[in-house]
Image (cartoon, rainbow, N blue to C red; front, top):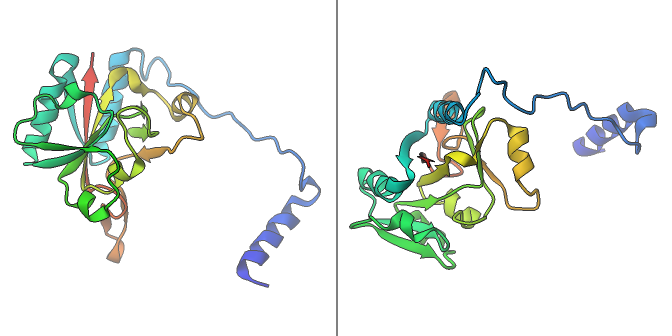
Length: 213
């Protein structure tokens, strides 16, 4: 008997008569933040900013009128010269770029080409204040999952009205059949000698631009 078969057998034995029957799943977890934690939209934005920064991501703030300027400033600060962008990224987001070539994703599939770019700019589906998490679902301005996982730098635009308090609130906005990517800071794993290694399965640098309308 293989290890897998032994584990499955032990699980089935533990279920006993409950095997094959419905099991009540306790759902007593918190669904919303309390008013003391986040009474206003500004509170949510502040919590999200704090939690994202704690996840080793860089956070910038912008108003709707200076979004394009802020995107350009972030890219110039990294000396980016060539970036990827979803084909349906709003044109206005990149309208202030000078000296930066934006490559629209109309079928980028070559990994070496993507790795050779200086980064990617996307939007998001929803963001979570409590955990400092951003969720992409492949919708408008987000592109394919490949775009946000291969380039070494990801600039993600998050509008204030996309920020919710908790994970259950975020899940309520999402469709489970979509290709969901949950991002909580640069990806990391335990490397040699238990040292944190970033960028093993995604961009080593995450920058979040919070747009307050």
